[in-house]
Length: 479
Image 1 (cartoon, rainbow, N blue to C red):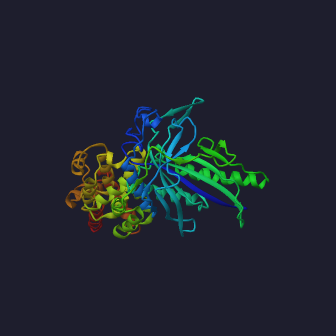
Image 2: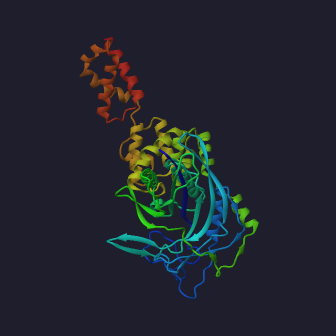
Image 3: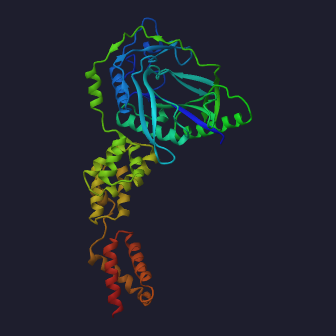
């Protein structure tokens, strides 16, 4: 490639509050359209905004988690523009006095080296209405209008899609583990705008920037960036000019599509929001939030590897879900078999959760039940195959592992005398195969174990079963 890629990221993050940022309007993603609309959100004359204290606390928490300098003056501004999703004609935001400045996160780049991503600012603002495009029409859902947001703006320090994805994944984890947001990209509570520019390698000349808005998944972020790099490169190699544009990613065509052209930066004519007086935040108030930050995912990853002996790949998969990480830690209190806990969570359990698109906390499976199941397996009461069956039933029925084992007769046969009684007729009917024992002992052993497992539907303890088989082989050969 003849060009260097320059990328900056803007993330709009819905704060985890029960009411909106500047009104008492309710916040609930699943409510019917246009049922949570407050007068203040749509700019009725005479209505006055009030600041959501919880929203401010969450913004401070996010700023602290990203290592930012926190402004103790809370001042809001008006961003003025006219668009159907903004009925007031302005958006309350922070332009001149963002709540947080100068943060950073460390990610792993393509060379497996740490790279510092510098974050310019975090500011508080209110969301706009949601636009729904269908049947050549645009529908507006004002439930989202006024929902509290923070916007996290990075410096243009990314050089490829991999770095962007690593940053978004880590940012999302921080938002989840600090309880700032539920950070669900598919529901729009974590949205990503990507600004992409190219420049000739070795040059400071930067071509016009293209903004791709409202990317809602890591896959779409990667595809949009790669498409834009290719598209812009082809334009420049033809000697043509790149115009400033806002685009969106179309999942059907896997391409970015023009939304609107920009002749220059939009003049929003910012001025201080006159209906909200500047608020001086006490340092004690800020310190209390900062000092009580929960364990951050970066710290949790190191602890999981150290305390539980997990691989980084396993840790990343577990920590991608806060509830799953909590489930894992609770299960470790019931058994020290951490390897089995991880295997079941990342295997059988995660398969069901992903297939049904459900959270672990909405199932009958609990850490105590999984821990007890693993104890049964390690004691030889059930086999690993039977344990997988028990897990399947625990998703469907609110029963203990013991109840399920009894109900579905999943207990492992470990009594040597009982196993010998099962094997004796098998041996009597297949004595000829013992002639091969001297030349092919493994084949003979596997044959009898296979017949035994077939007879008992895999319920025999293989260790005890093999021991009894060897005893019977020796006994029959020496006759």
